[in-house]
Amino acid sequence: MSDLINKASLQLRELIMDALGKLTAEEAVPAVPLPDFNIEIPADKSHGDFAANTAMVCARAFKLPPRKIAELICDKIDLNGSLFDRAEIAGPGFMNFFLGDKWFSDVVENVLEEKENFGRTELGKGKKVLVEFVSANPTGPMHIGNARGGAIGDCLASVLDWAGYHAEREFYVNDAGNQIEKFGKSLSLRYMQLCSDKGQQLIYEHKDDTEKLCAEIYSLSGEGQDFEMPEDVYLGTDIIEHAANYYRDHIFELKDLPEEDRRKALVDYALPLNIEGLERDLRKYRIVYDNWFRESTIHEKNETKLVVDKLIETGHAYEQDGAIWFKATEYGMDKDFVLRRSNGLYTYIVPDIAYHYNKLVTRNFDKAINVLGADHHGYVPRLKTALTALGVDANKLDVVLMQMVRLVRNGEVVKLSKRSGKAITLVTLLDEIPIDAARFYFNLREANSQFEFDLDLAVEKSSQNPVYYVQYAHARICSLISNLSAEGVQIPESADFSLLNNPRERELIRHIASLPKEVDLAAKSYDPAKITKYAIDLATLFHRFYDACSVKNAETPELMNARLLLCSAVKQTLRNALTILNVTQPEKM
Image (cartoon, rainbow, N blue to C red; front, top):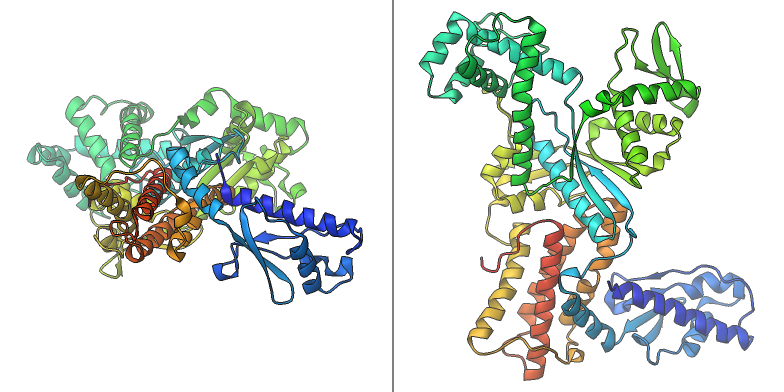
């Protein structure tokens, strides 16, 4: 795949080095080791398409004023046959270089040739990357934080794929441990409440309306009421719904069983339904995982025991008061931490250590990336330290910490409802706003930034709505092409792109060319927001071009053809950027 910005930058470096070689041969500058110099893209394009600080950094080595060095280089540099048209010297010795017609023509031709592959790069060289995200507790529905994590994680995996990595998506199912114990206890309590006289009365009264049944039982669950619940259980109406559905199918089947057996039966019934629901809801959100990895498999294969035994054998863990401790202080942490309690149970971090050992060693991924909430900040160093002690390169694990999102409606923060036992979940959000808006909005900012999601703006059909604004640019091009086709004007196979010399045209083409670079930057920084920003900027530049440069009424047929193909290139580039984000590209709006 072609990155014409990088190609021009590399060519310019070579041209400058050739000029310096000539100057050295002529003894115009001394033959000394050359300091490294930077080639950058100026923010102000009146200063050129590229700028080099070569003369500035060579001043000390050459014992010459920077401007003098710049003049010598510009006198010797040979731009004939290159991508560059001219060079200028600015200020004390900065060198600015301007691209020629050929480069701008090459960009448009390149997009039209590569089509849906334009923007793909080979940065990753096929390395295997595992992106784990959402991994919501399967004991309940996904909340709004999972909605943001899902959009970020899925688009990050897509960015990595476009950057040449082999990226896989994984959901880690916490189907073991304390939360499952709590889930079982919650289900059992609700089931036994339904077996009571009051519970049976309510089931009879609401035999055809589970939602009303759940709401009434929840309303009677406060302190001192019929269905009072302890603090260490899940209180959501989803728990009541599972218990009610099981009761309706099986009546008193579990009533007289031992508590442990009853809990197991209810978990075996409800957990698969929850996991199936997670998968269904995420598919609605356009997220399809390559792997659903269950925590229970870690325990079944004794991988928790294996990692703890290995830490003991290598001297990185010790026994004290019947518990096994990890020597975290040897790795600069404040204090050691427990791996296995004196009662023989592992702490929460041990399955996670075993899981990441499985990712990086057993399955041999080159990189593991986790998208986690910001509250995991202190957990990450513990995990990395344990992996290091196990002989794993902890740099192979990267964590994207994500700030929570606030929902705003009518300028006010939307409060979560505690009375009904319901919070705003992924599903309720997607019932209210388009999926395109959710995926785009949640990637408008870096993951570690605070973010307000304006529910009103997300459904607004105006240029103030960023996803609508970008999609409208795509639809506007489709409409243009369709209308011209109806008038007998077809898209030509080729055109003279050197005619595209209006500043608006050049500005647009420059931005088109930067998609491969933005894909690489997004992959390196784990920041899909770079792609949403790119798409918004591209839409803005297209709208400016379209308003300033008429396509249908261009001065000549040749210019119309060139502009029509430029529009086709913009359309393709917008499609590719939105494809990375898995946002639709409507042809009519």
